[in-house]
Image: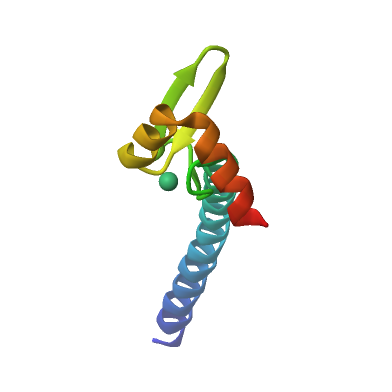
Length: 97
Ligand SMILES: [Zn+2]
């Protein structure tokens, strides 16, 4: 009877140890993955030249002009920039002053 209990207890401890080891390895690999994912997309932040807002390049409205690329927070800002690029640039410097 006692030996049966000891065996049962031993199995329980082994299962617990196995689970802990597995969770340790799974947790470590998960942490590495999430860290890698978090670092790459947020690194590319762009500035809206019209209102001066910073945003993720993937969410921004893009405008290709000659060799340059511009990003805008909305279609409205893009239209403002297209209608008068010089005015929006001076407005941006005035806002930062
Ligand atoms: Zn904007």
